[in-house]
Length: 254
Image 1 (cartoon, rainbow, N blue to C red):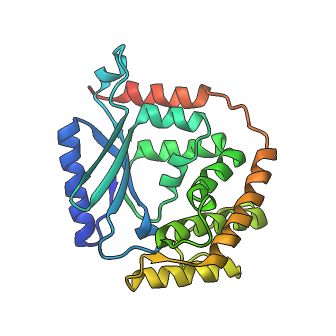
Image 2 (image 1 turned 60 degrees about the horizontal axis):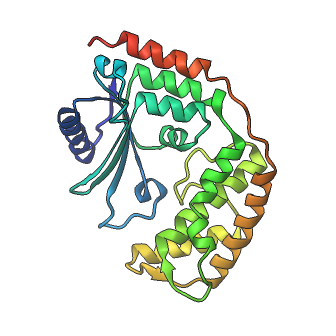
């Protein structure tokens, strides 16, 4: 297992993981950070959005009841969500993109051999249609907003980042390696608006009004959504995801 703790903050997060493991009687096999800090629009008050994959005791996977598949909570500055390995592989087999976004995080705290096996499985179940709808989901709230009312800066920013990422995907066939606002390569006027909004937020201006940004986001959102509707849903073979789940469970010690 690889554990990353290049600074004191990461060490604190690892201590937090140990506390969760003991409390929930689980083993964390992958952990990363999501949210404002990986996109570059965090402020001092921002939480640490932590996501992790865990495994339970072996006997839990042979019970009739299938409870305890997701763990959520807040503790101090940590907002966290953990997902059981069975739920993770089930979601991957349905081409849901959430887990893939976890593996794309630039801030990884724990990696294991098991998480590497999951990562290798992801391309087999990738769906372009699911990618578009997942990313556009960040923009749904903003797309319904009036262009005349102030909005939270973070709503502009995350929506803009995801739209910009899809535009890059359309041109290159790949998502940007890093979706941090300072590392996305774009000459779009939308990118300029989003950077300005992020700068103002960092200076303490949370509620902002940028009519041009809202109008542009709405236009781009609708265009990308129409394209997504025309995409075909791929029928996936569940066998390999199920096979990996059984392999992981049977190799558990207890």
